[in-house]
Length: 411
Image (tube, rainbow, N blue to C red; front, side, top):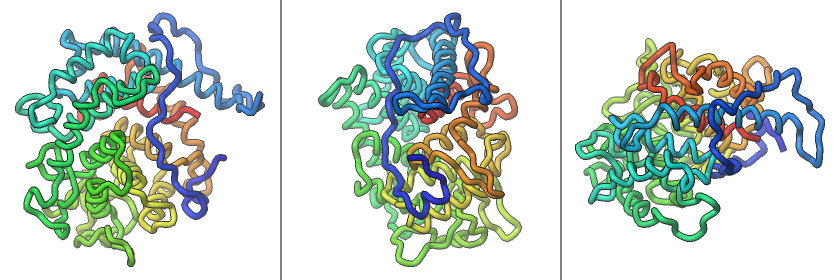
């Protein structure tokens, strides 16, 4: 059943679903992808055997883009050591592997490109259980993205049981929980940094890293009641522009809580707080799109429901600031990271339509597919040609973001 973002916040439980695997198949070469996607006006809405033709055609358009994106990573994106953007350690490689496996699960064992990338990730496993380059300042980020890749590889070809990487993943889970900011770092639940994750155990925690941590723990089978996920919820709630609602155990109790009050999210409440979108005249930390979708997704994984005022406030911000032209509050900066978090959050939330401010109902899947069709490069990659901030001039990273977004856009 399709639902919109307004009624779901009142009537429908958010779906706690993990990332779904796309249909297995061979890796098509870019030269073989010659079909043009149908125009939206040409898509039939008739149904056959209970399946909507619009859904079939949209999925086909996604497959065409995915084939071209994967071909770029296969032919132009990988280094001789199996890495994608190897200067980032395991980080971008993990995202690229996960992105490919979302569309081609069997590639974990059949595609030499993916096999070599998995070997590269394995080479970054450290004695403490983390998966990162020696000397890395980004241990949480690298380990979390590597976990996403290895979990998907374990599921290749419908494998059952613990899988090839079970031991590595268990140690990575313990590592991630160990470097999370909590009593082990000498802080209490009253500290604004509590429960968060930064690039490493001694880096100030932020919502982006905490979101990746929660994603990894969720993929590893930790449910909403897991102690580390509940600790992370305390941090996530403090990044929301919303005064702590009565009766909630986790909320924003910092001085910034109600200075803006729009229900969106910002980068971090730690060390005095920061928003990449800047501050208001009153000293509030401005909300922005990518962090708001990361916050919504994290709250869902932590077990919050649509009836919860924190979820309702986040959905209100999304309704008021719906856009695929910009990363709301940030313009072109972080635009493709935004597309990734946008798609994953709405998919995890079970949303099909967003009723935006002004009364327009947006089929976000169709609109995102059209946007990514219009921005894919001739070589099959994607790149942010308006802003290189946060490495969005890196075609490997941005292509991974887009392939992940497309996987969440399938119907």
